[in-house]
Image (cartoon, rainbow, N blue to C red; front, side, top):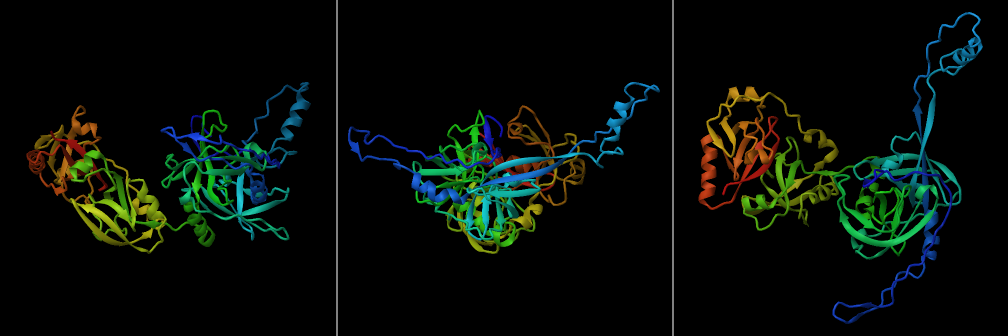
Length: 504
């Protein structure tokens, strides 16, 4: 875990069984903002009974990994005959890994790691974090009574950091816990964490929900519950309970400058985890919905350019060829504001709600297209099948000499003819537009990251095919008292993106 940053690998230590129960109280009364009284709010007088009921369902996860050692063979020195060191060197070299008296091959060592997990099915299904068991050769589950069972990995998902394990309980009766509704969790609700911090074994901590819907940039589906319940190294994969004893989160990351808890921990919400776990149990892999679009955030400038009242939704920057919406149902420049009845208020919300939808489901997607609200029906594909299609090709090619016809916002523009296509290695999939052959480094275009070799496809959602057409489009916007111009740009390989440039 890196200090001063979000860390998902917070699991290390040794296994023991220690229970720390606590008593949490708050003042019996609180003053209201205008001198009135509010009802007394007390935390749980004791969590002893709840802890006793849940602790046997929480396990410690230990893993081992064989790491090959470096070849230690060194050449035998030439010693003078009768040297007093002859006997010493003979013994040393005979016992090398490849020597006559040593084992064959380079030596190896076992690297061990520990984390937490919990039982969700008495038949032997255990949940933990993917990073806890990543690269492990062997995985073991250690129960509160000291029982240790070997585990099989039946499914894992790096995108959400979830892994599903299977143990054979034999005659042992396992105690399972169930998932609660994380959507009903409110900031200020009491929560209980049980895990294996620093290898101490079953340890209970208590706190509140500090925030919900946190994006910590750890993956495409970030929607974490933040809590101040103490979560430390080794808590990864452990459960976060509500006061009913239901799992509402899987502890996975902390922010800490010291490596220990400072009261900022993050849990994967049960709503997201349950769906992934169900797929891993059934298929051994995830099967996420896929829309087949490349998106970017709607900024205030883009919203103004599109005639939108506010910057909301996800702007479609491109459509993946061969994807579910490659039939023209969704087009570049559309702003998706609603998906399958769920409002999309920001770009980062769309990938999560799409991924949580079943493959093959027909959904209604609400888009803003050229200022008009439209509803389109889409049948979702499978993300895992489409990821290779969605990979952007590396841009390449040499810079061409400036041979443009006009200057615009520091860009030199030219027709997209065979000469320019060859000079910038622009693929045939980029059929129409105006090629940018040079960009002034001190220009407004350079500030937006526009580069030579890109092609202007549209301005203000109108096609542009000639350099003079681009100039005319800008003049038209100025005549309409528009302050920003929305450019659709294509890379050499055909990937689209949008930028805005001020025209006033």
